[in-house]
Every structure is written in C-alpha cells, then in structure tokens.
Length: 502
Ligand code: F6P
Image 1 (tube, rainbow, N blue to C red):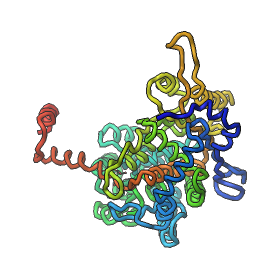
Image 2 (image 1 turned 60 degrees about the vertical axis):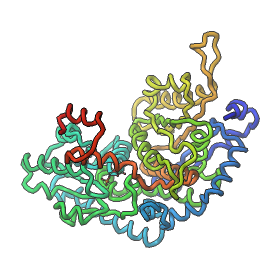
Image 3 (image 1 turned 120 degrees about the vertical axis):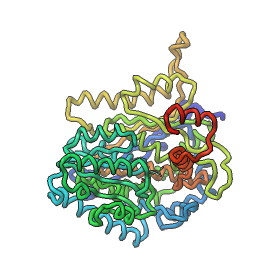
Image 4 (image 1 turned 45 degrees about the horizontal axis):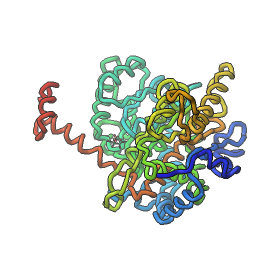
C-alpha cells in the first residue's frame, strides 16, 4: 500500500505532533495515585505513525460501521459480548465500571479478598513471609507483571509466581522459600487446569514433607469455580471467588490479583483499580480519534491490515515492565488471534499481529538492528516513565529516556550513507507512551488501556475477543497421548516412542 512518508506528514502539518498526541489524566487531586495530590498522566504520541487525516476519517467511519459505540456500551452494560460462550465480559466491574449490580457484587468479592489479605498480614495464618502463587496464562501473567512492576522498593510478602508444569519451575520457587512461612495461592478460573492442579498438589506435598503439620491450612484458592476448590480440599474461608464473566486474561482485577494485594497492600491494589477505572471512564465516553484505546487500535489496524505488518513490538524503557510483552502476548494474541468473526463468517485478512518486545536499553543491543535495517516494517511502541524507578545517580534515568526518544527519532529519520551497509531507510513507525510516574494507579491505567485497545481492535474486525477455543485441541491431544488411545500421524508416533511415551 502507498503511504505518505512520515517526514512529509510532519512538513505538511506543523501542528501534527499536537494533533496526533493525547494526554490522559489518570489521577487528579484527591484521587488515588497522584503523589501528594498531584495530577498524574499518560502522554501518547502517535505522530510518528503514517496515519493522515484521510486514514483517520476512514477509521472513524469503520468504527461507526462496525457498531463500535454499541459494542462498547454492551461491554460496560453486561451485554453478551462473548456470544460463542453466551457471556458478558465484566472485568470492568471489578474496578467500578459496569452495571450497579455487577459493581456491587465485585465490591463485595474484593472486600472479602481485602479482609483475607489483611488477616494474613496480621498473622491469622501464622507468620507468612513467602507466597508461591500457582496459576498459568491469565491466572499468572497479570499477577507476575504487577508484582514485578510494583514491588521494586518493598514487598510485604515475597511472592513467586509458578506456571509451568516443568517441575523445575516449582523447585526453583521452593529453593527460595521457607516452608514454615510459605502460603500457597492456587489460581485457576476453572480449577481444572492440569499444570496448576499438578503444581498445587506438589506444593502441598512439599509443605507436608518439610514440617508443616496442616499443609491444607496454608492454601488460598482464587477461582470462578469455588465448589471445585472446596471439593479439592480448600476450606471455604480461604476460597476467593470471582465471576465466571471475568475472562482469564482480564482477571488481574479480581481475586486472581490476590498475590498482588498481598505483596503491595490493599491500598495500592485499590489505586491500581482506580487507575484502570480512569481509563474505563475515558474509553466509555471519548469519541473517534479522541479515544486513546480506539486511536491505538486505528494504528494497529493500519499496520496489520493495510500495510501487512505481521508483528508489532513493545519496548518498555523501564525494568519494572520487563514482563509486559509476555502479558500483552496473551492479551492480544489469545483475544484476537482468530480466523473467523463473532458470527462465524471467515475473516477477510490478517487479524492480531504477533506481539513481541523487550526492555530498553537491552533490546537496542540485541534486536534493534532488524528494526532499523531489516526488511520487515514493524510498528513499535515505546513506553517510559518520566519519574525514575531507581534512586541512583540521575544520569541512569536521563540516559534511559534519551535512548528511548533517540530510537523513535532514528527509526523515523533513517540515514543515507555512501556505503549501503551503513544506510538506514528510515520512515519506520513508532508510538511513544510517556507516563509521569509508574505508580500503582498508572500501572492499572496502562493495563486497562491495552485491554480496551484489544477490545477496540476486535470490534473493528468483528472478532469475539473473549473466547479461546484454539487452545483446546492441543490439550485434548495431550490427554490422548496419556491414555494411549489417540490416532496419531507417523511423525508423532515416532516421537512418542523416542520420548518413552507409549
Ligand atoms: O489454555 C488457555 C487458558 O484457558 C487461558 O485462557 C487461561 O488464562 C489459562 O488457560 C488458565 O486457565 P485457568 O485459569 O482456568 O487455570
């Protein structure tokens, strides 16, 4: 597709930077998150993308034709936005954005979680210094990211998130925890996931074999299937339910966030919810290009569906967000990596790009070569915090920010040299997200921004982002290998034999 050069877009419109940037206020005076009552915001600059006025108008028309406004209202109003499973998607209600009944239910559930968190902090289960949080996918990625992002200064409880069924993962957590002071959190929406249930069993065994007389008394269950947790043996008082209508990859705000609350305290957990709510309020009311998640989706759609980019990259210039690409991979690829629309009809082009990324500046010295001179066009998101996360010489943070901004500028500017190997084509797109400070509220805002961006992308493509049937076949085949009853191809049969699985 012919697209205007970024350089030309800037020279054609001196106001481009302002027109293509937006500041979202996340916390104002008196609200959670703004330190000392100061306001705290997020600046998003899309000016280094190729969208021009014509493209923006076309995408605004597409949003209208796709029924964006109605779909968005359905999301917040408990409408069936997950038609294949006949469900609403009520993660917003967990942070106060939903119908009054959903919000009331969410508040009651979180109040119960808060009481348990505080009781544990006060010693109700004995001295608890460590928590092994066992879950996988959406039951692990959000908590792992949030804990890594928000406990750099201080963790009230030392949490280790274990997901893989590879026993090495659990052994590694055991090595870092004292069984006498360790709590086990079993997180599973369904409470049937093989990895989680196997790890949970082994964790109980480890406690029992290491002097804990009542291992079951040290287990907390986080689930949308409380009856299954009770059946498995968790005392009802330590089962923290969440609604079935909260999807796994959207569940950080529910009791799946229990280890986050345990590590950062309920006050910061509430600030995280308040930051997400600020983005909900914006997403629910802003229109067209003035709606940040929708505008981000316009950019995603432009590069994926019109230019044909197969991947998008995210580089946080912040160690605290090192796990963000992992989290976004599930959020975006499990939500929108589909081949059919919500009505079952085939999609007429590419859907979710492959999300990947890393941290700056590390990635500059590893993969940026390809971004600058490779043959792929990869739209990049840069994310950085203006306030530093560290307390060392300010030179560290200044350098970090300088590098972040330099990369976006270099991707766009390129460089002509006599030697072709030293030439950079330039005109490569990037978006920069600069937050004032990465506190709990801003973290919540950043995650909610990406949730709504994913939803907006889905609406523009007609996809149901809330189901994930594509993960089932592999699970069924693993069971068939286990039972020895499957009918497998010759290659798999040979591999099963080589691995000693038949
Ligand atoms: O297999 C994919 C998946 O269903 C994800 O959608 C989900 O987040 C993960 O497994 C874990 O599921 P559960 O929370 O039910 O254990």
